[in-house]
Image (tube, rainbow, N blue to C red; front, side, top):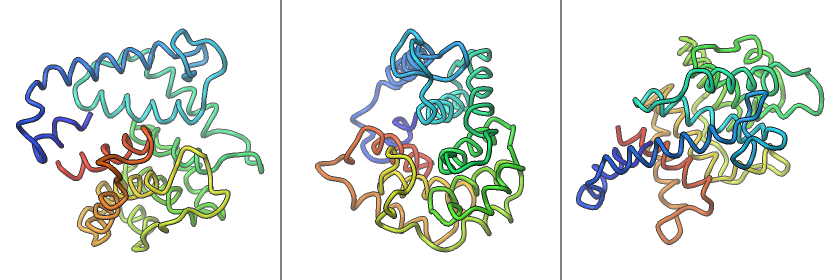
Length: 232
């Protein structure tokens, strides 16, 4: 999704076949949707067998919405079924000790990206101890900004950078320190792009690379999504 923007900025001679990039993105969209289950979420493998994976479903929904906004084809029925799964299985869930509030906050940001911000859930999450976590704060700020509440979003995001090290036991195992930095950068670019935190986070991402890449495929994806937005 961000390769064309980044390549024009970093190495315009290396990636000249933009049509190839478009075909690859569309193929990825089709592969993701081949993993959709009957209840709308996505499972691990094509064919939709087995239960849906909540984190993967939220992450995929974000990617599909951003792809659609960039002009790629996402079937409306599949998109709406996935958003319905997010609303039912991730966001509008009973408030209990078993709720993954980091994932809930991410779901709120994605639903807001789709134009359906769950503001009641956002306000409830802001009153929880987990709201002090950098990645939760970033996603709640994104949800508020997408709902047209930019001043509130800036206040939630605040001037503090996320910690370099994540606290023990913090949220889903899918979000690393690199991932949290990328999510924070993405949030600042959307909510408060003139913040002095932006160049600091860009440098932090750059410094966390090893052998011209980040530790995992997921880290690479989150970092490139954020840096692609920065390049725009």
